[in-house]
Length: 129
Image (cartoon, rainbow, N blue to C red; front, side, top):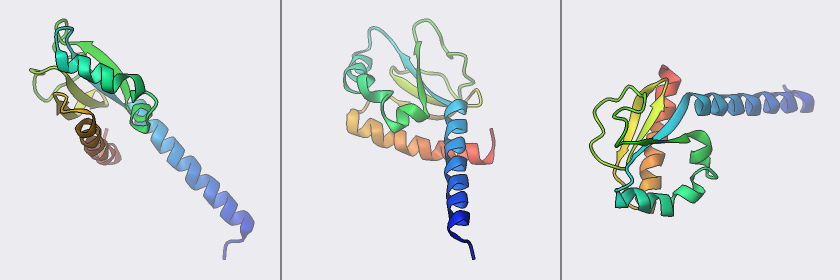
């Protein structure tokens, strides 16, 4: 049987492990937004999501990096297919694409789709990098 001290130590170890796993995931993954100055949907994302993204749990987990799609076709990422639409949000882990949201379907849909991609990312990082 684990005493009070043992439970406290075990709780600390579990919390530290979860924190390190989250930190490792955050270091290994990012959200790359391919955008264009002439894109009205990019401007809508910038207005609706841009100001709060970095303050959210998703934003802390997936650092946002913007790539001007008019100047770069891959943003230094191994893409699974070309970016044909702006905005396109590519979830990158270990230098390669592991998920994608094409277009900006509105604030509610964006967060829902991003949540699905984050769950997929957790599975990917748990099995390989």
